[in-house]
Length: 110
Image (cartoon, rainbow, N blue to C red):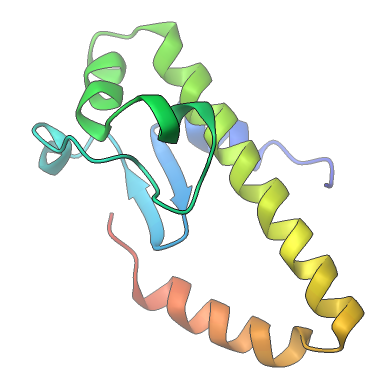
């Protein structure tokens, strides 16, 4: 990965990167959302906690919420970079990147 504060800074502010777009966990739509943050992620947050619980942690200023969100975002970016390296090695990066960016920019759920 690269040296960047984006995953942790955004995580601490309630913004989570997912395979379907970016979500703001502090949004009221997640109050009763008992699904995981990202079905395609295998981090501790996505395996063991719901969006509603993470939102609750943020609302009561519990440090666990900040940590879980930061670790989730780091996991997301690590997986993204692993995918990018694989696509570059296979000579498929250009086509993949156009499709990925189109999907990511149109599927935002903030």
